[in-house]
Amino acid sequence: MTAATQYRAVFFDFDGTLANTEKLAVYATQAAFAQMDLPIPTAAAIIQYQGIPIETSFPLLAQDPMDQTTLQQLFTAFRSAYQAGESAETIQAFSGIPELLTQLVAAGQQLFLMTSKKSAVAQRNLAMLSLDKYFTAIYGSDRVVAYKPAPGGLQQALAEYQLSANEAVMVGDATFDIDAGNAAGMTTIAVTWGAHTRETLKQSEPDYLVATREALAEVLYK
Image (cartoon, rainbow, N blue to C red; front, side, top):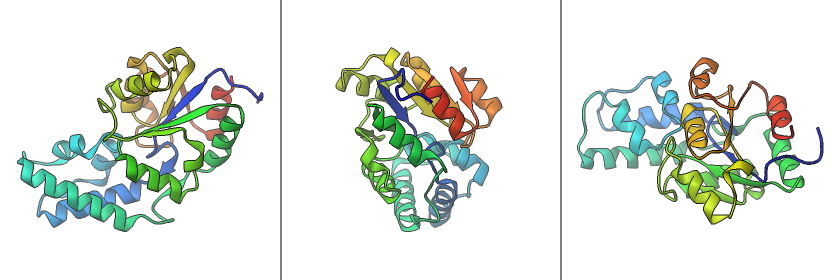
């Protein structure tokens, strides 16, 4: 690995890319639906939609349409359960991620988080893992003009930090990340240790598809 990289900026997804939060997402979602006396979604369905905001995923997870009042109550129940369930056991950085982020920052990279979480939640979760110090900015679902898989959030960040799409890369574990990066004209790297399978990720045609943190580092420094 060399000391330099071809990219000026690396955008990371959080859930399933930097950290394993599957158990927490499943617990909080199922607890919220149970609290509202709604049919409880399966763990597999919840994980499949983990990369998009709950404002988008919960109507898709529900068996029947919900009015806005019910939806807002469901969102509140989820956020309460999620925060209550946050711990060192339910939010864990994948092995090799802290070291990779250290190397990228040392090489002069700007790192950004592009996540479906609210910005404050993402900041809190990064801080729990001592990863917040590596990031130039966090773009949560409350900050962007359009959620993934739309490219609006990435385009917004590029404009705000005067970056060109051809000098930036999007790293994520879900098709939502790859579709957004492709649409923004960025290099895309799909990682296979998160929500979506290799076969599903291939359908979004990422520039790179990697199965280990070591392979991710090699691509970033290629």
